[in-house]
Amino acid sequence: MTASGPVVYVDACIFLEVLQQTHGQWRDSFKVLQAAERRDIRLLASRLLAVEVGRFRGDAGRTRVDQLVLQYLESVDTQWAEVDLLIARQARDLSWQFGIKSGADAIHLATAVRLRADFFMSRDGGFPYGQTVESTSVINPKIVWTPSLADAAVDNEPEPVSGDVASGSRASSSSP
Image (cartoon, rainbow, N blue to C red; front, side, top):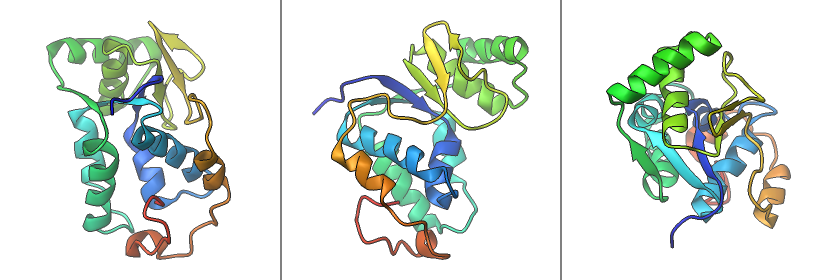
C-alpha cells in the first residue's frame, strides 16, 4: 500500500527523541513515525539521516537503534535522496539565509525543500520555524494528518522508567 497524505521530512532529532524518550517531547515525535508506518504521511529522507540516526550512542543499544531505523525508515515507503551537488549548493544558500550553523541541518532542510516536502519537522535550534521555505513549512513535530485513535493512545503512554528504551521492554511492539 502506497503512503498518502502530506509529504514530511523528519530531522534526525525526531528519531533520537523516540530512542531516548526525551521527557515531554517524544510522544509527538513518535506520533509522526507511527503516522509514516500507517502510511498517513509520506516520508522523505536524505541518506545522511540514516547515518545520523544509525550512529546514535545513547542509552539504547545498537539492536534497538537498528530496529528503529528498519521499522521507520527502511520498512515504510520512504523516498530517499542522495546528497548531491544541487542539494549541497542549496544547503549552503539556506545556511546563509537562515543562519543555520550545522552543515548536516542545512543538508536536511535543503533536501526537504528540493524534494518539495509539505513539512520539515525538527526541534533543533537554528531552523526558521513558522516559516515556509519555497513550499516547505518548517515546524516542530505535530499532527499534520487526519488524527487517529493510535495518536490518542500515544498521549496515554507512561513516561519511561530508566532502562525501558535500552532493554526494549515496552509492552506493545509499536511502542518506542
